[in-house]
Amino acid sequence: MSMVLLIILALILPPLAVFMKGGFSLHFFLNMTLYALGVIFAVAFDFPYGGLATIGHAVWVVVQVDE
Image 1 (cartoon, helix red, strand yellow):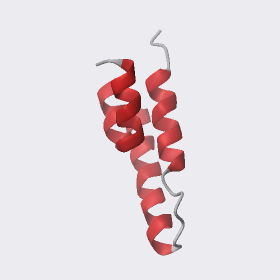
Image 2 (cartoon, rainbow, N blue to C red):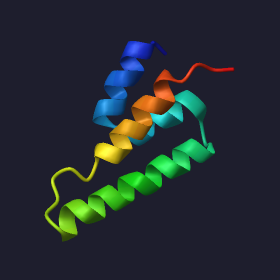
Image 3 (cartoon, rainbow, N blue to C red):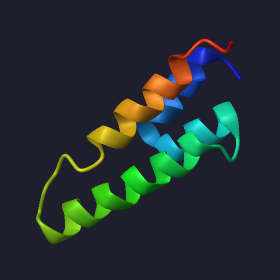
């Protein structure tokens, strides 16, 4: 998949972009945990920026150069 499409996907659905990049890896499960915590903070504490950590992690994973 193209890098640009993965970055756009990381902004819209971060866990899916991480999955498309590396499958069921540690990064995927970390991103899912960040996503769940972001949803909890957004709903419970009315915190509108709960997903920023998830998006940042997803973009970082996507732009990493494979070794």
